Length: 96
Image 1 (cartoon, rainbow, N blue to C red):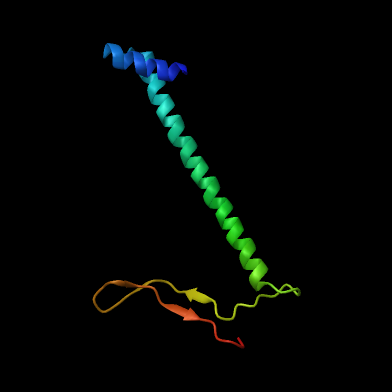
Image 2: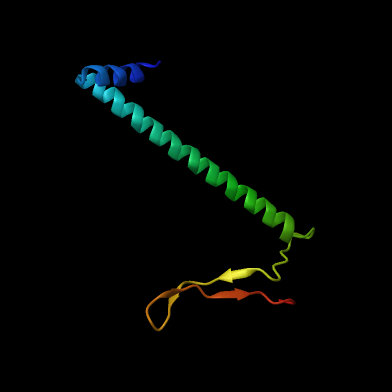
C-alpha cells in the first residue's frame, strides 16, 4: 500500500486528515488524471500514425503520386436555410 493509499485509509478511519495528507491525496489524484490524459494523447497519436500509414499504403503508388479516385472530400461546414450546419461532401471522380 502506497503512502497515498495509507493517507486515504487513515482519513477514512479517523475522519480526519492533516494538510500534508490532503495535499498528498490531491497530488495523487491529479497525477493519475494527468497520466491518463497523456496515455490517451499518445494512443490517439499512434492511431493517427497508423491511419496515415494505411492511407499511404493504399493510395500512394510507386512513383510517389496519389491515387485519390473515389475519396470523399469534406468541405467547410455551411448552414442550410433553417440555420442548421451541413457538411458538404464531394467525391473525386475517376480520371481527375
